[in-house]
Image (cartoon, rainbow over all chains, first blue to last red; front, top):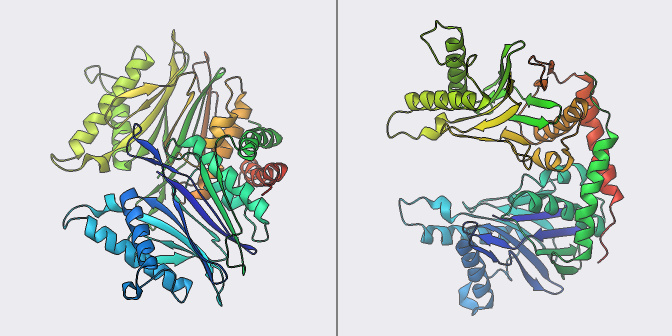
Length: 242
Length: 242
């Protein structure tokens, strides 16, 4: 499993992903699920991937290879004219990879993968998309300002309740840390280290990125603090009177 | 979907279940998922059901019918010598119903159902079991003092964090209310009203039961209060420093 979140705030975009992959509980590895393409001053693209690791790696390899290839190996993810066209490119690549992996008549679900794509291309607004295994995609709206992929349930309630578009990056990272901590505590197949990235709008370069290990002081502070804060919050509510 | 929790504390057993059933989002109904058998002074049995409604109703009808039937229609749920034998009886009944519903070769999963069984029979301790669609079952331990069936993920983190075996009934109901509120807010297929029951050990009769509707004052207080308490808890944590 996997847990990835992409979140849009007024100031820009924030991304977090875990790094655990597993094929059964006795076959666990660490793989980066966050990929970036950057042309400073022109575009920043961030892709988060969940699902079949062979599929997601093939998609990223194809995107990467074409971005470095001679002119005739279009389309390149570094040349798409808009975020919408970038999402289409990723959708098409996902479809291509899945259809070439899954023999006719075989269940294609096992090869499935979902992606969160965010970024900004000069002359356009920052945008955030979710790309489905079928290759189609949706964009965030003001009502639903974030996307989650992978093991989404444990970490959703706090996102829904505490998100506010005027949040600072520091507050947003805190929110994501709490959401990831709840998920890591509940599902063995989501694990540290985490990859964090934030992008400030109209800067056209990655503002900040960090890999957060289990010994990270801030992560520990949030993880321990949230348990205590939850217990206090719970205690503060009135008891039932039969 | 469904959400049911059975929880063991030092003082006894507490049960809560929702009442929403659905076959698609446009076919929603309200059905009780909590069933009780009581012989005051001798035994109290509580059964919570999740899964295929036809299966769960058939299981309960069979148990019920046999408990009222002439002597030769044994085994009766009112005559089992122990909670362990009661869990076996329920497991056998589940197997019987599922195997008669699912034609050979057809996927039996669609007919699946899970149960939480709790109660006490005179001369024995209160016990709490989870019965699987396959008819086998497990019992709570000190490490895992509760069972959830149905849509279990949203409501689990608070159960794990706030449970304490020395809780009073009033505190336990508060805990279940928070767990159910998180689930109801996140999944349309879990809905009010809720059924609440608690059983105080060694009393051999149902201590308290109540149906909690969406207009219930305490539910509203917890639902609103928990949102605010969570936000305050979140605010109390330190922000990330890049």
